[in-house]
Structure formats: structure tokens, C-alpha cells
Amino acid sequence: MARKEEIEILISEDGFIKFHIKGIKGPKCLDLAKVVGKPLGELKDVNLTSEYYEKEIIKEKAKQKIK
Image (cartoon, rainbow, N blue to C red; front, side, top):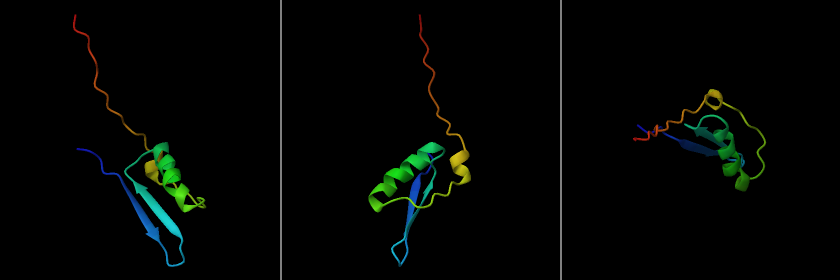
């Protein structure tokens, strides 16, 4: 089953934009935050969740040579 990845974007009445990235672990989350935030202006505050500190597990299929 594929994991669910989502970005929640909240805009307050005074124009402050806040977004929460879910389902992406490690530095990729921060990279995505920079990409999403760039057109919106300067990132002023970054709060890292426990998900940021988790390691992403990448599954690779083993290749075997048959002789």
C-alpha cells in the first residue's frame, strides 16, 4: 500500500500562510517546504515534526544474474 502524502495549507485573515507537510520523512520534507514556500514569500518559521527525524525506507528489488 502506498503511503499518503499531503500538504495542508492554511491562510489566516491577516494573510499569514501556514502549511503542514504530512507523509514525507527526513530532509525531503524540508526541501518540499522550500519549493512550496518560495512563491509565497520568505519562510519565517519552520517547525520540524517527529516525522522529519524518521528515516525513509526505500525498497529496492534485488537484481540477480542467472548464469
